[in-house]
Image (tube, rainbow, N blue to C red; front, side, top):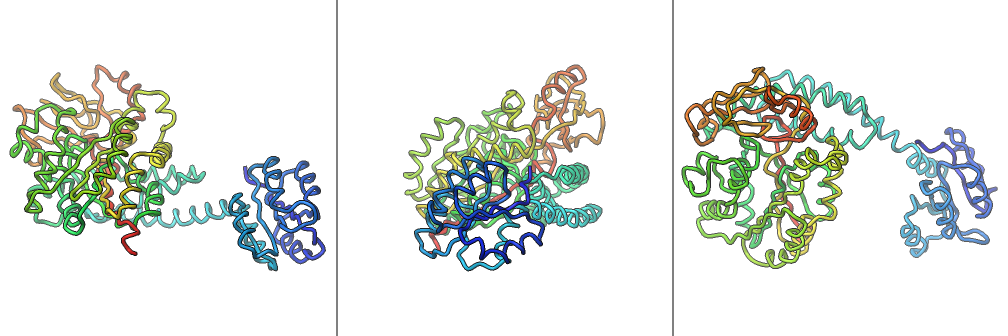
Length: 523
């Protein structure tokens, strides 16, 4: 509920405030005055006020002494200290009890109006400006959608789309959010067509103009850091979407200078493929050829059992010498507590400390199986909020603070994103088909509707190892998840509304990679 446009001005020199009060009334504010603190408390007990202007130096109780009692009556009322005192101790006291603003007399009517307007109408004014900016930009984005976008333009559009989603999610702008989500849905088919056309070309001709892919993360972003610094922290947050990253940035930039880039995940956009590609610098078909002992046939956790080995081999190839690598995967609270104890020692040594944090991925998957998690992360906005809450007290943030304290640069990225899936897509398959909901390998796979998925017959052309004769790949597009005709209702009830990955959307494929330079390096 918005606060009333009323001002309670508490000052023992009420006769000197006439011009200020008149000016506020001319701007549409109702103003009541009290000469003493006890009078102010009595008025506040009778009715709420939008904002309280409180003189510090009054007979009887000081203004600062009234603040706790005021907040006991109305905890949310903004309180502004207005004082003649320029003593640093008074200002520090005001800051310490978290007053909403602080003005030093003499003040002019325009100063007072500015503070009152910001506190009472600031949110509404900001929302109006946000709505105007969005409507203008939305028209421009709609026009761009009709053009032939290259990979750079797709990244620009996706990043802006996520930024708007995060900004609109912080306000009560249901209509604007619906418009944005409609625009996102319309982009999905265009993006799927773009990837289906360009992705095999990027792999067939790696020397052509193409975006950085998962296989390029270490060579393009990590190796230059290793060349310039004795110790480097390399962080991969499993399943971190761009909009989640947007919410973490303000906290991170308090400690680090940020240089932000983006890359495109390989396909399928799932951990066994995308994260192995990061640590190896190789596509899955190349991993199987060069390191068959580290690549099995099964699509499960065993495929990610050799990330540290793959990273060591890749860095030695890229740097021309052995690079010390310390690797940990943080899955449980116990893992995090143990890591926090060890990370100071890691960062004091030369080489690369590589950390994989699985919380976001566990949250994303777990909400489909757990009713409580589903409620607290019901949609993208709620998922962002939970991620931010976790981050603020996470072992990841502790490790970043330790890196900043030691002047160690950080490369932070993710292996894939996720998409909020709402639309079941029926597929026909034999018993050998894999169980994944956004991508499937199997013989004679086919979707009921051709526009619901990308069908890949030539696995090698998509960087994937060959399998049994007749095995093909289906990649879901849009917000679809695969269901079988025989289990249609079961899958719909269980997975509709789940955040999934492995398919072809900007949400899954376009990912942040951030170079974090400790601010202390500048001194």
